[in-house]
Structures are given as structure tokens and as C-alpha cells.
Image (spheres, rainbow, N blue to C red):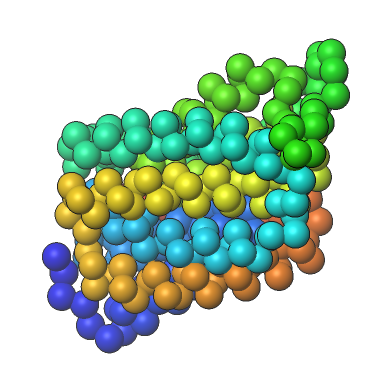
Length: 266
């Protein structure tokens, strides 16, 4: 583990604060905090697991801030939450058996995949909804919104996104938001709130697995966790002020830049 100087700790705290906010806005905050961990000397695999553990409180902060938008989505939360938990277990297990070299090679392409999916999400959503035989909003238990309409495809996509999120946290929010936007008919703000809660669940499962079985930089976690919690709550305030188009392209641009930076050698 690197020996962290005060300036490096400040860098990590700042990155975690902004990452927590960006995750609440639309997802992709790990695309900032992960490179910050690399910059202070953590190997890629260690940086990834440390980042996953450290940003978990940020997802919690964002979920608290989005309580209003989660109202009426209990059916979706229960169904997609169970799928996400199983996917997260699979993803965490894959990471724990991955080699450092393999992980470093595939990271930029995982980021590009997430950004590309979010960029084309509106067009894909229109194609899916044009072929949808029934409305997507189905009253779930006690009035909670259900997840009917292309349910198998939605669950399969969410399972893969959760596995991806546990394997490599950077960009999982982008991917989940794109998937929900494609298959679930609702406002982007409400889907953003749902994405945040599902991301929190994936982060908790991954954090438990990594705390037990992986090499985590606990000093970095201690500094970043508090900052990401605050950033998550601040991010909701910002997210509510952005329209859907600005929200989407802000994250796509940022994610693409970081993916190129990693691909070209950081």
C-alpha cells in the first residue's frame, strides 16, 4: 500500500466528494475517484476494490436525498433489487479471481461500453416502446410500480449491469440508468432515484465481499467514505436542477474522457 501524504489524502477526499455528487446526478462518479486512487499510487485492482468500498456511503447519501422520487416504486425496487443482489455476488466473485493484468486491459472498454449505452439510450428506448404491447407502469404490491413489459430482457440486463458494477464500479450508474431508461417508462429523475438505490445495493454486496477477501486500502476508505456521503446528498440538489438531456451528455462526455485517459496509459 502507498504511504499517503496530506496532499494526497486531500486529493482523495475531494475526488470522493465530487464522485458522490456525480453518482447522485446520473452515475459515473467512480470515473473520477478511481483515477485519483491510481494517481496516489494504488495498483488498478486494489484501487478498484478500495473505490467500491469507499463510495458506498455516497450511494446511501444519494438515496436519502431521492426519497421523494422513490415513492411508488416499491414493486420495481423489490424485483430489480433481488436481481441486482445476485448479479453483484457473481461480479464480486469474478473480480476476486481476476488477475491485475487482465483487469487493467479491459477497464477502458468497460467504461466506453457504459458511456455508449447511455448515449444511445433515448433511441433504443423509442425502439423498445414502439414494440411494447402494454404500458410499462403496472401497479405492484400496495400500489408500487411494477416492471412489466419486456421483463425478461430487463432482468437479464440488470443482472449483467449489477455483475459489472461489482466487478468494476466505475460507470455502473451510467449503465443502469441507460437500461432503466430503455425498458421502464418513467421520468429520468425517478429512474435516476431507482438507479441510485440499486447501485447502493450492489455496492453493499461488493463492499462486504471485498472487505472479507480483497486487499483494501483502508486509510483511503476512511477519508473518502465521509466525503462521498456528503457528496451524494449534495448531488441530488444539483440533479434536480438539470434537464434530462444535460444530465445524460454531461456524464457521457466525462466518462469518455476518462476511458481515453486510461486507454492511452493514464
